[in-house]
Length: 314
Image (cartoon, rainbow, N blue to C red; front, top):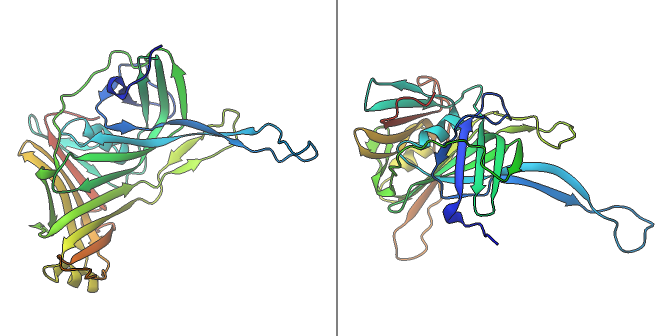
């Protein structure tokens, strides 16, 4: 009897032409760290009386297809996930490097079909109508750079063979945490010991009454860009910005070289005034839970610039 192992699992994905309808062309094979994307259908306990103390059989609830996919932040493949999160980028350049610019606030977002395959069983789970609700990045001094993508899908179908055709793939060049940098108003921000950034589309699921229990869609509402900065208290620059409610521009990015970089720019960030706690002889930390807003000059809240050798993500 074959047993499924994560070492042999595969994650295939492709943008849909019609929401909820899986493409029939060859999919893209994505590298991933973990995934719990899939369907679940709960049970509702019986509320019947008069049948004795032992309960009657439960009834089935609606089908929900959600989950997190953790992927490496890499030079090429990550551009496809950014497209699902933010929309199709504007690409410039006539050769290496190409620059792909994504902006927040798109009125409509593409959907994916994502197949999670376990060939040993064999079992292949095709999740259609997948939209990325949020992306979370953590910045640290060392380690691998990963992104957690919270997804909402319309439905899932299980097959005994893959529906992904002959998958294509892009060469994997991974960003590492030591290649990261954080700036404030264009200047390297010092004394940062850790940071986190979350962009959310705040998808609204359209839960209509239908016999298959699926949703009709997941539509973007007011986006949100939030995060935290953990800073050793060495000066009052950020405290002053918070006290005066002065917006700042923050960038979070990874750079390998001039041809391979990923930069997130939050154009208008507001910092809360934190409480400083002295709990011992070690250094004093200040923790800022920031929020971003739309910037009138930039015309959007966040801009993401990916520089690589991929000609297009259209």
